[in-house]
Each structure stands twice: as structure tokens, then as C-alpha cells.
Length: 179
Image (cartoon, rainbow, N blue to C red; front, side, top):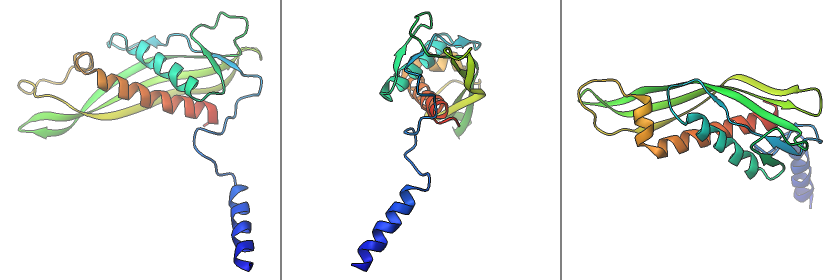
């Protein structure tokens, strides 16, 4: 019986120490129910990167189930808006075979913020350097020419999707947990 009491005490102590599942603690004000995610601004040379990242953020926010997510901040019922710009996309060769890159690290950087439209556009969360990256295999190229990011991503939709999903998880988790 004493062991049961000790186990219950330990579980109670651990549950009250502030630990929780990542992505489950929401630090936004209770009145935030509808979040708009208009198109991010694309400051890179990669066409449609803004659309891919915006759609991924919309999808990630919707998957959290707590908010209604809309693509436009013009509605009267919008409580908050996510905005930002994609500033950089880089490719860094990671592994080589006979002088040719066989794996590449793709990284995206953006400036994102969340504003409370019900409270004088108060910035609830902001990060001018949100980054996400992933590593991908690349096909054999010719010579030692550098990999062109736009051409690579156009040919590899999976790379786009994985990078966008990672980026969106990073943004939404940080935004909701106030990190």
C-alpha cells in the first residue's frame, strides 16, 4: 500500500511541475478564435514558395482544432492575423560522390508575426528569423555546377512539401506556445 501512495505522490508532483506535450499549451488570449493567414510575401527567386508555406501554415493551424482559420483578414469576425515574408532559401551540399553533391540541405528563412486585431493590432508573437531545414537526396547532375534552388525544388515537389510542413510546424508551435 505504501508503494501505491508513493507512486500517486510522484505522479501528482510530476504533473504539476509544468511539463506538457509540445504543441498542446496555447498561450494566446482566450478571445482568439478566428485566425487569418493571408499570403506571405515572397522575397526569394523561387516561384510559389510563398504559396506553399502559407498553405502549410493554414493546414497546421487547422490541425490544432482550436481555431477557425481563414485565408483573408478582411472579415469582421477575424481575431488575429499571421503575416510575414519569406526572405531566403538556401541549398547546401552535404554529401558528395565523385565530386558531385548527392545530398543537399534545404533551408528557408522568414519573418513572421501574429497580431491581435481585437486589441489595437498588438503583436502577440514575432520572429524575424524563423528557419526550417531538411536534407534531401539529389539526382546526378553534370559537372561541378552548383545546384539551382528554384530548378531543384520545381523538380522535387516532395522537397517542397516536407520543407513547408516542417516550417509550418515550427511557426505554429512557437506562435501558440509563445516561444
